[in-house]
Image (cartoon, rainbow over all chains, first blue to last red; front, side, top):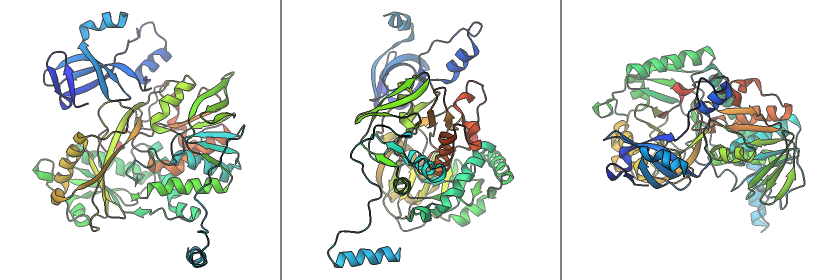
Length: 90
Length: 417
């Protein structure tokens, strides 16, 4: 993985990006249990596979979504976060 | 040792096979059941097997290793042993490990190349110095030799160092930990394997765990690539593969897996006696018994389940090494590698019992596992044998996250956390 295709800026070197971690759904802190909340705070899905993650192109400060294979160090797709609801539904 | 040498010479002259037994046997088949099954044939798993047999009389043990013995993070770390941690839990735990290290070579009748060097954590800012003082005071309180020294002391011990670090991060002082040491990592795994094997523990390499049978919330057996076995107690000591094993029994954990890379230079005449760590420059280095500089830096910046190496790492580390030791500019890098570090949110391990009865966890060893090999083996052996976590590891339980009682070892981790 040497370059990442940024949805805004095109292919850019890996060093210009930081990973913001997996796309996760925050439970409602008003209604969820303590156990659900601490599980959300700390637990992570760390089994290798294809994941949706937040990535940021730091020079332009642009956050987007990448689908990455965490076993093979490959990004399969990148898209704007606005497309996330449609992708999540599909 | 001389007697063994004599036997070797005599049998060589008589044309007989080498009388020295293998380090450990290679059993051809798995039994139907074991009292304890240990997943992971690295230092931690083998040490637990050794102390279970030696201290608790449990000898009907199988150690299952997916690859070859000691081929995971035991072989991929940078072999630094120290106990100058930050939290009371950490200091007591790692200091107990240091005490065990001292006696290992004679216990196994095997040279571990354990070499006490002294360990410097360089301070490049007032904030670094403040942390150094904090650590020194905590350490001294628990009887660990640790003190803050000035830049002149560093220069006297390591004349080759550039105290200006290229002008941008001058060295103001350091935390000096006299008992800091290095050891030959392969020998640690082989030594524990020999010690365990001699007491009847079976070591099965090329044996992958495919499933864990749980009945009524308790472990009942293990399914492997070489057949099924029944057991009521399983110890999981697989570092970067821990999430995959936990998935087999449906347990979640706060672990994230990041590669940790390292590299060695070509061999040089001995010039660097102590171990040098700089968290500001994200670099640490020691010189091994055969003269190679063993160098490491911080974790790779994103999750990855792979042991691939990158040029970015070698470049970044070389830049910082040259700030410390400019004369190394002509020295070549010989090898580069990576291990998969299982990181926890508070930089302390996860050890002890789990919600699944009979399933014990020794994980979350991130970038700090090698030095803990003896004490993690001893405390996990106690935990597996009695079912109750050893007093030294109660601060490292898996449940601490749900109780929001993190151990907070972050300030003392050596580099870039």
